[in-house]
Length: 450
Image 1 (cartoon, one colour):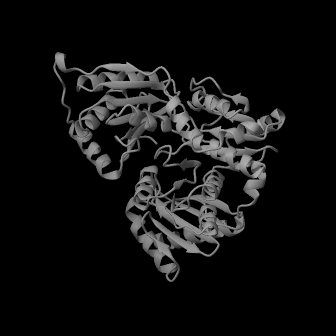
Image 2: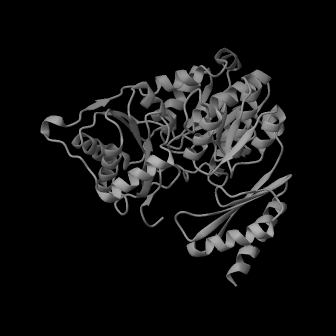
């Protein structure tokens, strides 16, 4: 990512190169010009550059007359809760999610405490590029307020969704890998409230990541043996802003991010009133199988948290999320939330008296393969059309690239927004079958270019 990336819900770039204090100030001033009057909540993950950006953002918002409620280092889902708690008109989370330390970014929230949808996000982009700012005179400047403990309302909202006493009675041994991100602050408090015996890796939220931030199997190799050595019942691994959760079982086996939403969904549909659920079109088929088992409708959105939330609200979904480890519980907030995942999985283990490995084994087993295929931006429409023709007669979904479905497999081909490639994602019962689908897609695309 060599240039500043501005999406409908925020921006991301390299500190000192594409993302500077001035860029951040102009961007939040543009958001202020769009939002209705009232205070903004700001928070940041643990990156070293976050404090600098927070200073710049507070100054910019004060300059345009906005009161600022500053939560300091806090998880992204906590920001959503704080917006509702303080009746703010919007929020800004300073985070680059799973990107390396040299990156940072801004994620915009609306007054509902969710990532802003596409239409207002596009308007903010227009105002930013137009340089539309409304600077105030000295007697109309905004003011600052700092929050001593930003976590308590978020923790209480999560505790209301689970059987706290049943979990506490189990005295689960838990390893939490926060990787020196924002997640340890609330994670330790929440798991303590649930009576867990806790081992914490990367507890200090200073942004000095002990492994590559994205909680994938490749990046968590150093954690697996620590889970085994600690003799715990479960391992939880967060990304730096704690909106994603990967799971490790007691043997040190990586269950991964895709299992997080599927296992939470299975538990929620067993313990709450049943209703529709939403995932994105790149999430594992496991969630579809769970929904079918419980006899509820499942809907797929385009990739992206804002798209999932839009569809959840439209369908009045009881639960949702993205397969990258981001469960979304409307009872807590319309934000991907690793803490929701931890509480729901512990609740499922306690309710059914099973290990996390046993709960995972109850789900159907699939393998996801992901491939990058070089392709210029102007060649994408022709490639998609060729795939559509080749797979004519099969169920197709064109809301986000092209998705093809078989009874036990699927293939998604979608263009990158940031580089001249398309991403081919396939899931099937075996790795061989998933690889074959990706290989077939590449052959079809190559034929278009020849």
